Length: 454
Ligand code: ARG
Image 1 (cartoon, rainbow, N blue to C red):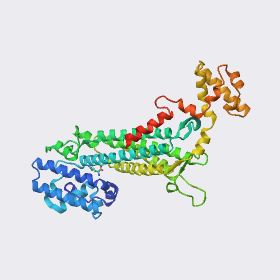
Image 2: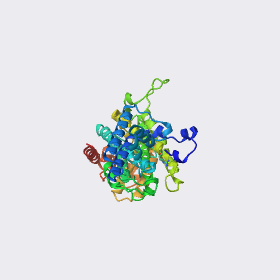
Image 3: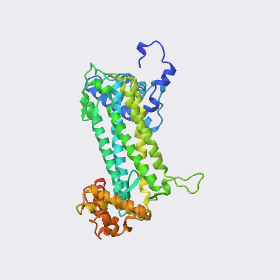
């Protein structure tokens, strides 16, 4: 492609080192679509005849069909997807093929291809996020009555509906969905026509190209357009956060499935056994997902680090954007449906959850609130209940086993009704603020999401 200026062949070592076709071949659809749109602008500018454009479009479509069928041979010597497709087109149709790269550079071409690719993937990821949200809602709805201890510091804290816990993840994945669509909006700007960095002396109708490719706008600065990878960083950041959310959910699933918690059972289809220990049933989907999060976070850091030292405009370093992008997209796109399917196969163990949530210490805060309702300042109430808990420690009993006399020694505000306070049902019923897990609120949230995700 650059033989004019060179007297030596490119070293085979350099070819091997610099080729990207082994991974960027995946951009073939987007590269073909970009070239077809570009050829429309070339024809409009009078740089291609209708006949030449028809040859180009037919030639590119033929190549596309062969790639699709798996019969096309990519060549390492041709370095990347852009040169592979253009060289093959010219080999097939002759002179007209040599006109396709007019007023275009691989710099604006690759910027276009990556935007087109990520735009498609953003849609796929948004749909996959909806899928895992649905699975979480369905799991919660199947066990709408189950209450478990909620934890802070992994210490039993206060009772919550199992569904409320799952709904927390539905909220997280909804923000992820918003972030992906937000990134999609910002990437949806057409860079072709920016040339290598300074546009071209040949005037093409960039807006025509944008319309052909479904972009609502064109980039406004040619130097920014070829050096900008913000859109890829934004997607990698959104993917890293999705992975972190999946990893936290994984951790909950792994804990819940352990003999220590026993809150859930994962179906055989989504667990693995041990080659050594016959009793084992391992939550591998959750563990692998938690593990893969390291890669996805690393990919974000990798691209940011690649970009940080780059002067304007395009630098070959930027070819290193693709592998992290592809890897994160592939990893998260694979994780979401597997995880959703595993959630579909989870059942909660009512008895173990009930046993755990029967821990009366989960109601200690409710007791402090009881005193507040009798005019005691919260700080004082907190101290009184703290002393009641300590007394339980001394007497080796639980809060309901203290006598009324015990309570009244700690505060005269206690009445005989204190014992009625000490039930999980009372505790849940009272949690009525927006966002709190009263039975009505949780049912309303499940219904709201079922409608929203239907
Ligand atoms: N394969 C290259 C990349 O991925 C395409 C752009 C090459 N441009 C160049 N001036 N060498 O970035």
